[in-house]
Image (cartoon, rainbow, N blue to C red; front, side, top):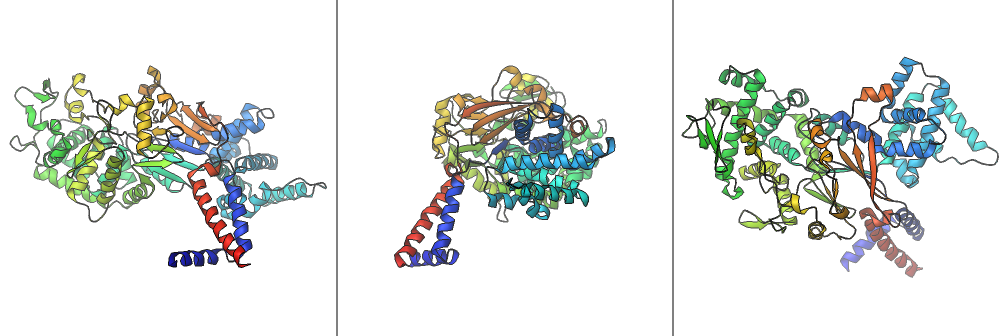
Length: 623
């Protein structure tokens, strides 16, 4: 009774009258009968800022489709291209037009009218209240008026509309108004963004991507193995720090470390040049950080036998006389055995100079304010997995055994499998970011990055072999059985049920593994139950995949996979209106249009309606 009185008191404070309750019930019932907003899924961005920015700006082609649907019969392809480019990059496009031909008042008027009409189209599935919240502060009232004016018998509304545009153009405010409309269109075209892992590494601008994501209106992030690596590094894991640095040295992305995050490699490069004077500075740095990494990894493997990764201990298996190493029971010739810092009696112990280098690098990672801010954002918006509107999103895999059953990982004396495995991984990952973090928590961040049964890795990583063995047969990285079984509906349905989702209407949205389109692989698998959306946005993958990435669009009509060709440059877009070429395939069409009431938000709204109906009954009993 006390809880009921408290509930009643709070509800009466928010809705003090019967009419207030009725008004809110009517409003909420209207909302749940609107079409669901568009969800945009992207994965494996890998620091490719320009390509990511463009796909974000064109909403995986949604803007282009809206423009074509409105004006395909009325405007030429070139004119439609011009409108799209203006929406993608409004300031840059107007600057380019001004330089080439000058901008007339008629051009401003024409483009303002096009953008207003397009803004009306993309806002039609939202309540007026939600659109108002999305409006830019400086022009909110004016845009609201323009979006909702209706022609009347005497043409007064049309004159009102024209006078507003006259004033905007007359006082020289056209450019700012066009920018505001373009940003509104992009915001309303996509209701929610999902980043299914791997923002970092390979490309050189993950920091710029994170700056962009921090400004995005609605998103979630499923951590990838490259994200968890940087999260571990920012938390102070020395093995993660060494891995992150090695990745960026390998891909020539020193800029993100030194300019993006203010992490100096001076101590590393000076040490490397001293140890390996016959190599170029970058080759020396690569070798020095590799040896440090293999020592740090060895230390973790030795103190965490539960990881079952003893076969990755290779420094103690090097035969310096024969220049060979034993890996997986086979002897391989090595291309280099000059390791002056390796003590053959204690091969996994850092030398005093190596320890000093790592102390400098650890201090830099822990004290980079921008990196710490970005990792804090990843923790706030991210998770190991997400159940969203009936779909299951995760980056890597759900560890399975050879028969396709959930594989049990024994950690801290307990066995974790399926959903419990991912929940445990997230729990430890979050603890690693706190002041209560233990060494074993930091070690686990490294395991999540590259552990054989890590749900973010899912393969037997062969970093040492790829660095020091030329025989490529030693490079083969055995993958988790998950990647064989996830082609079957049975496996996908088992996984969906494990996470409490209905297999008949749900899907798994997966990243991590590039889709080799050139070899005939398809992103949609298991009869539509699983979609892999890592098609290779990273330039490093383009030869492997044959394309430049897959993205996914889920709107009220169904799900579409979008295949993108390589992005040339923003300069090409501005100069030639050259958009990314994309193919769209609708692989699931809803029998009836999906409404807000069918979504997770809709379920909460229906609960609110039930509560309000009970409050309304209370008011009616008192009358």
